[in-house]
Length: 187
Image 1: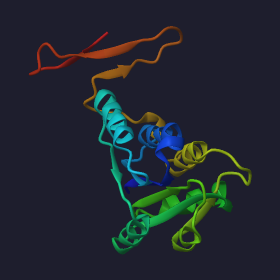
Image 2: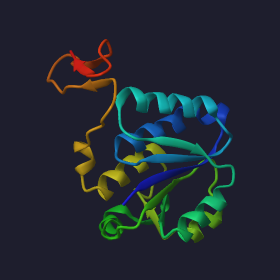
Image 3: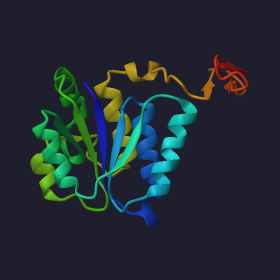
Image 4: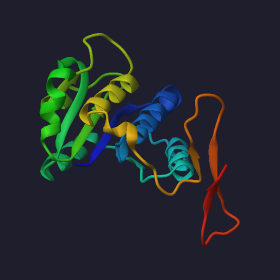
């Protein structure tokens, strides 16, 4: 099962930071990419791709002007659509059911106002609490419950940097590029 995220209604001037955090959260917690709708934001896309290059793993951000076409295409290819909203069914109730299906998942997180078509097209309207909060926190909690915590053990191959967990201090391995035939991470 592949999981991607659709970020609706990105506004370049207002939403750059929050949309970046949606992308970083999606990447860190197991999604393979983000589709961005709204304003085309080349700089944001380049910044997220740079993070993936430096820290490893396969992750892409793509711009889609017409999110409606993307929803139709996703469903026509056999995928499921999960819309994160405070008006949906409780995540703790539906996450196990969603996990049972091996179909690819498109997780939709909103922008300023989510059109009713998204609610109608979604296979699952999922609520991460019934209170207003961030699409970043909703995405993080949903992915954690979808993957049943296994996303916390992900390994990201091919990056130039890797954090080695430690109780105190910062322990970062950096790829030694002096020998490109056998690049090793060094402390």
